[in-house]
View (tube, rainbow, N blue to C red):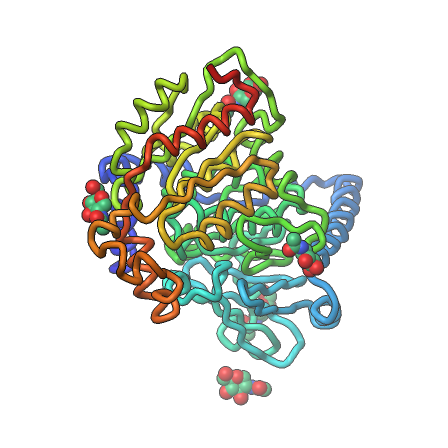
Length: 466
Ligand SMILES: *[C@@H]1O[C@H](CO)[C@@H](O)[C@H](O)[C@H]1NC(C)=O
Ligand SMILES: *[C@@H]1O[C@H](CO)[C@@H](O)[C@H](O)[C@H]1NC(C)=O
Ligand SMILES: *[C@@H]1O[C@H](CO)[C@@H](O)[C@H](O)[C@H]1NC(C)=O
Ligand SMILES: *[C@@H]1O[C@H](CO)[C@@H](O)[C@H](O)[C@H]1NC(C)=O
Ligand SMILES: *[C@@H]1O[C@H](CO)[C@@H](O)[C@H](O)[C@H]1NC(C)=O
């Protein structure tokens, strides 16, 4: 309860408006009440129907097995085939794949059972793809998987099933760094796509560290990837014991906002993911040059850190250049169905280094991202937004500030190593340096120089420059 409260507070501060959150809690709960993934069958007396069902079930079982096997390779695959279960602990993620009946009691949080004739073993994993980051993982409750022939508590487990599903469960956490859109896409949405897309919606998502608002925000993605309603796996779900023919715990991760077609599950590129978003949110991902209409810019307006201190002057300058401006506000991003379309209608995103730039995933091909890079944040800017933009087919431009544009310059002056030699400052202590440059810096943009960058962007987009 205390943890819930803490998270709630965090989210409120992130969204910047408690009213929105409070208004929506009841709504989420109504629309996401879990229900069984197995429609009740009409157990007809006719043999034929039974026969048909059995055939369909066999077919379904085979394809389910193929789909599960696509998630492992090499010795992990050999182990899955030999024992029906394998777990891998990668640098970024933890994942267990189980190709036999799994019991998930939602009345008994985060312990699951896999009865079998193997010697008993207990596996623990945290189903969130930021394993290397202890701060994120503190917000992710571990799941215990009890596997084998002497899992005493549920020895007779199959007789406990209250809801029997015919599709596998994919279990993941909506904890970690949610509240930050970069992490939501990087650690959950893209990994979920990689793990589940090839199941053709024949999976049910079981979400631990269940956050109503997160499920609401990504409802369209969740619906597109699964034909079944999500199940709250925390123990305050429907309180029943759910049984699945197989399950995947944890999500596969490749790299920052990346999909590598050579890696598991094989064949998915960033373009596939963007097309998936296009289908989900009705977007046009193909480049469309529209020199007849005004160029439209999405301005990411930050309020606490890396604030553009002369944002109003920037806006005036952009209006003078002929731009139509949409200023993105934090609460707006909760309604992804409409917000994704707003982003998609823009030609350019402008913003200081920060999570808001993640919205580049919704731009059409050939649109432009202009990242304002504060002092000492070159590496992070390239790694999290620059390189991913390139791989998405989006034109990426940087506006690197000079020392004088940083608020740190006014505080420390030109001769302090904080200004003259940030690399040394990073070497002396990563944590302090990070909080200094990431959280302790605002910028005042040089309007003349920035105007030059925007004109470059307009030229790239094919707009005549007057
Ligand atoms: C089964 O597990 C219980 C407790 O976990 C233990 O006391 C018992 O010896 C085990 N039995 C076998 C046959 O391994
Ligand atoms: C286990 O379940 C089976 C089938 O439901 C039942 O017949 C049997 O009595 C149960 N055994 C125990 C020890 O509960
Ligand atoms: C994609 O994955 C393959 C196989 O793991 C690897 O060799 C290659 O470097 C990766 N590509 C990128 C761009 O990371
Ligand atoms: C998506 O587009 C289709 C047809 O173009 C339309 O019927 C539907 O309402 C749109 N959905 C959304 C969410 O905009
Ligand atoms: C940055 O600007 C915001 C908003 O004006 C302010 O609250 C914050 O204290 C500033 N940060 C620094 C380090 O000056």
